[in-house]
Length: 265
Image (cartoon, rainbow, N blue to C red; front, side, top):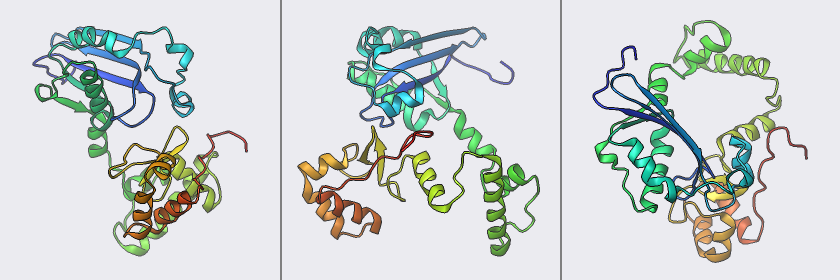
């Protein structure tokens, strides 16, 4: 185990799900690697029937289809054995704090059980990675250009370097669009954001609220059921792009989902 010292077991886990909203989406596959203090490892992995259709966007990410989970147990059916397997273990994984942990906790609560997060410590290796490996312009200069940025935080040097980095990225990644409009569209598709501020995000091909009292609901549903909310956004102090999207939605015009990478028009 190297320098890792354990007082009790730690369970590293990963989820594949129907989407990216921990408040509403469901697990379609879970893998847990339990590491005991003596170094013994035990792995369990299984697919889960989410009791709802898996959106095509999600299937494109993890490759799991409705057919693949049709005869699998539901989370409620495996929840007790999974909780017993976890025991009193702490939890670990990559990027689990903001998504996997709250989603797993909610799935257990929906099944009438408690994960007991207040008793478990959590190690997220992505947090360590981001803290220890710089992701600023200096780091980009080293990675893409192989040189140190001697003029860091001097405006003229920073902007010149930013352009150099972009040109190096275009040379390194042939799949990146070479025009500004294409690059902006690629960034939005990669981030899942509909608008620049990310107030709306793509969920199952639909623009969906990522903030406020309608978080998790689609723009289409809100326009149909509570249009006064969109009228409020259109007249309040929100970014101009979001206000324009809201006005168009009130007229029955909705954003078109970006095409998947490699998909033709």
